[in-house]
Image (cartoon, rainbow, N blue to C red; front, top):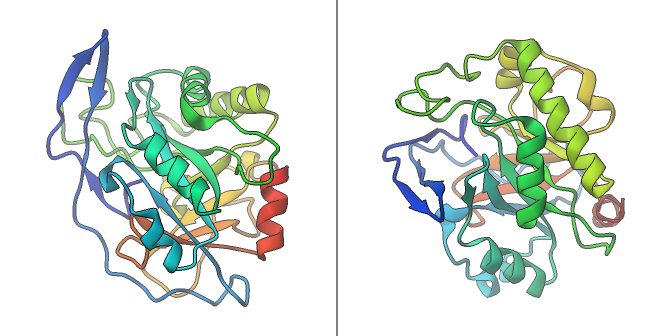
Length: 262
């Protein structure tokens, strides 16, 4: 996940593995941590984390001591990157009893939404009605490659130089295919500013997709994208208390289990 958790590609290493190009990112310049929020979420916060390849092998026994209830783990990016740490992270979260799910980092110019949804489902993004698996999440946000050159998304603006209509079409295709493959509506992770700029503040997806909002600058969630009257997850810190990013679920532990059950 990137801006406002600013993700910049400092070095893009491309390695051909079986004909696939593996993209390597680097995280830089993270905002200061805000305290664990309590306003505008459940009275007793149901806390969780999200991790990616940048956290490597997570020490889940240490994480357990901090009392999280859930975790989202990055599985894929575009159609040519699979997190090499996904298995360790997902199995580790399962082993300590967390409700957990996977997320996909979208690269809209690299391939179509349906194709990326297929890639995600094939490599960790599926869902099962076991009460412990959260619906997959689509991480759709600022283009982290705007300063690079050589690939379709490089040297493009924050919206990948796509019109709002084209971006809405891409998201619609991803969500429809994910629902077709899993029977669940994917969670949408985004920021309000990106959603306004790149989808035209579209309301279409709020009726079905839970919202995972990223905002680090305040102790309250603040304005949401159009259509959503409430958020489901709030990513409020990139510097602790958990590895990766720290989140709060907007509800009770029982509500979290209901979301997992579908």
